[in-house]
Amino acid sequence: MTNERPSFTTFRDRLLARERMLGTFLKLPTTQVVEMLGPLGYDFVVIDQEHAPLDRGITDLMILAARASNIAPLVRIPEFSPSAILSALDCGAMGIMVPHVNSVQKAKAVAQSCRYAGGQRGFAGLTRASSWGSVGGTQHMAAQDSQVACIVMIEDQDAVEHAADIARVDGVDALFIGRGDLTASFGNDPDAASKVAEISRTVAAAARDAGVPLLMLPTSKDDLEFVKEIGASAMLLSSDHGFIRSAAAKTINDFSD
Image (cartoon, rainbow, N blue to C red):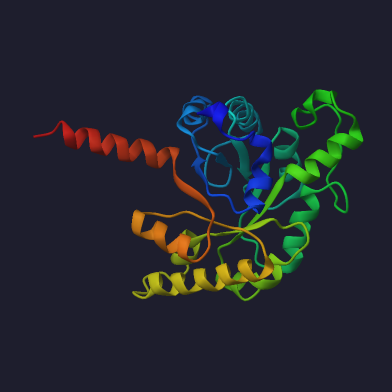
């Protein structure tokens, strides 16, 4: 299936075209999981530096494995900084996901860090992103600006009121609704689920009105129908941790009396 999918370099084009794409979060510091996912047909992975012990060295190798498996590698950085974005992009990431973007000012800074033209991305001519210098500097910068996806996460209550303006920031390609953090922010509120659902509809409408795609993580088949209904086109399905736990639980149940 790897060869049947479009090239990993077309991820941003497919995202902007609202193609249905399926990916997953990667939290284990290894390349083997990425290599397994390639033949299964996953379109992209999000290498999760925010919630997993993934340093620059292993991230570099995981990006290499993803590209070799024709899966678009995205990196969720731990927190916003131009250096964190630059590191991931120079290693060959095809997209950046930034957590806790709760203001237009922050969204603009994120977008500028992802771009050469009109932005502030630092230049390096000998990186995996530049095919180790096999393309000229101008060609490399133009290709990166057209191929790298800039995704910001709306996952704080104070971000919701700014979601419409964040979605319209030049250079922001898509919104991801972080329902986990939003749900946690309501604590023991028995109405947390319904409140987060309403927030999700609000953010989805902001994305739709701004003409930017929406990414979400459905937690069940029923939830998949909800996220499709409100307009999500790219889906994160669980994580490597989740896959191992669910398969291990099923196996032990199948073999237990």
